[in-house]
Image 1 (cartoon, one colour):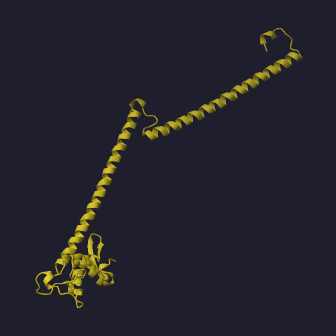
Image 2: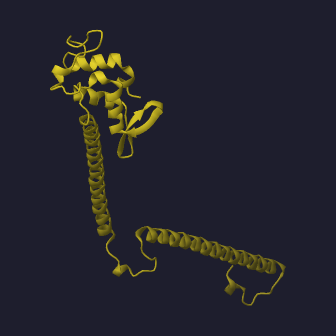
Image 3: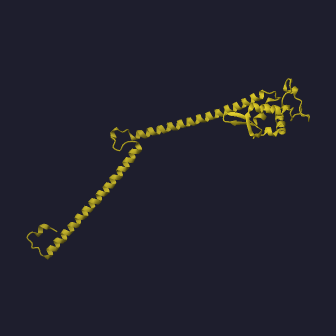
Length: 225
């Protein structure tokens, strides 16, 4: 409605109705604009809140404060490259550590194996066994490891020093020990009552034959528990 065109006119019913409708239309436009303004402001506030939360999360990932001076911060690209280099160095150090642990474990295993062999050999050497290797084989079949120590498993599953195990073997199997006053092992060995003494594959044969004969005759010694 052109308000200027109403100058000098008489306000009749028709004109009044038109004015009322025009005012009502203006009120609706005002209300719509107000609603749009309020909703728009709410939308902007929500968007700003979302952006603020994302900024805070991003800053936390980077390890900086959200309100920090951007000019004073290092380049994010530089930080990413430094992180990659750090991760590569960490992987390298981890591999070196694992290799060192494996090497240490292997060496410890070898040292324990050598210690076991030396302990058995030392115990066997204290007795005049005809064949020290045979005696060591039988003794080793009942050697058990307890921590870093090696013990002999006697009857009843009792663990005793290996020296006691060697002494028991020499006493329990006197035919494996050189007769008192004998020279070397071969001249003093006479075999058992069955005549086993000079035959291959029995106590008088080579080392493999002797071990087989001992294992067959004394399975309780040759079989590890």
